[in-house]
Length: 165
Image (cartoon, rainbow, N blue to C red; front, side, top):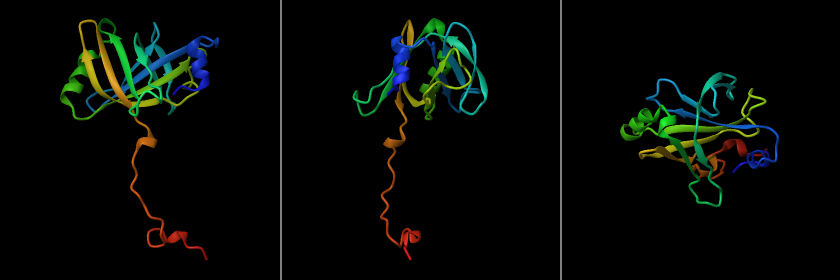
């Protein structure tokens, strides 16, 4: 799922420092939640050139692999003491029929102008579990290749522009 450059950064083959970030969106949230795996707040640019402050956080992300399963599920774990938005996300998961949208991005610390190398991964959070020490969120990757489209027969009745003259 990660391209070669990101794999090299994760494995330590690159000298550049990779920053993982998460963005949570939902209609019940007044503002999106932006967190970065970094000890300090970071001002980072999004794909639309808007700048947002990502709050420091600690989290672990288990990235799905294409061969794992057809759903491409992601898992994110936060220690409870580190993630101030737990009660809000828990309330949304328990009360809302709308799913929480999660964008998982990578930045290079030395160049924070745009997300690094690869477009963000977009997930829908489908489940959340809180125990005494952590919260674990599970989500499914939103892939356009998994979106079903209606079958359309290419005939002159359906698509008159196909007629060759």
